Length: 312
Image 1 (cartoon, rainbow, N blue to C red):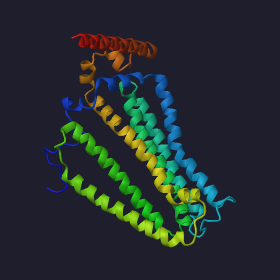
Image 2: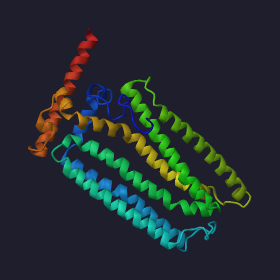
Image 3: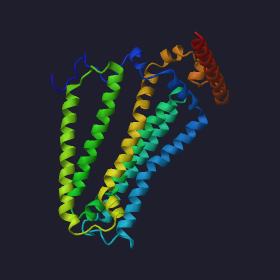
Image 4: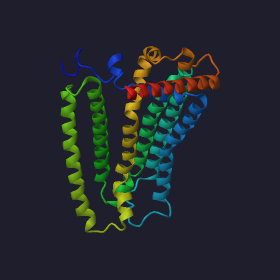
């Protein structure tokens, strides 16, 4: 039936332990343990806080710039958002920022007894936190873009375009991981159809935007090239930052999910003790020293194995 997933239709989260091993190799497990100390986790938390505050800073900065004495003469002040609209977006940002910081704190508390998951926790926060921050950074430039291009329609065009491209990036990453887990023969027809629709929308939005840009601005003059880039493409450029973060952390987050789902299987597979893996009943400094010795021993074993293979 439509809207109901078939029992035999797997998703990216349904991989078995053996299937997940196509993504979770020994090098990822070692990397996750190397960055699982208390000190590194505290530093990462403050990094998460700074990351989420980028959106707030950008909103306030654009509010000041658009209503201050330094506003560009090129901008159409009739289209610039009012102070009350900017205040609304700032309140929305502060609410989401506060919820994110609370979510990050709860996450730190929940993984105190599962220290091997700290890399997974950070990767999730990187995607969510930068997503919120870059969304508001993009939103903050919408009115300036509309003003620079002398048409409010560009606000709606960029909202649609950012949404479509975000969807396409996620679908592409999803499809790549599905192919790794289940093979290239795996097909999801609904995803394919949705991707085609997204392609059509994105292409036509660009064409429509280009036509409006030529009609409204090339004949009236836009000023400097830097003004064109910042004013005309600000919402797209900021969202591009999140697409890059998503590309960098999507697979690592998925690996962490499988490491959490099959934690005991992976611990036993790669020969780590419960103290090294969970670290909830041992001193953190001693735990990290033990892990360092363990990894050094493994590296020496790999080198010896490699030498034997060369001789043979």
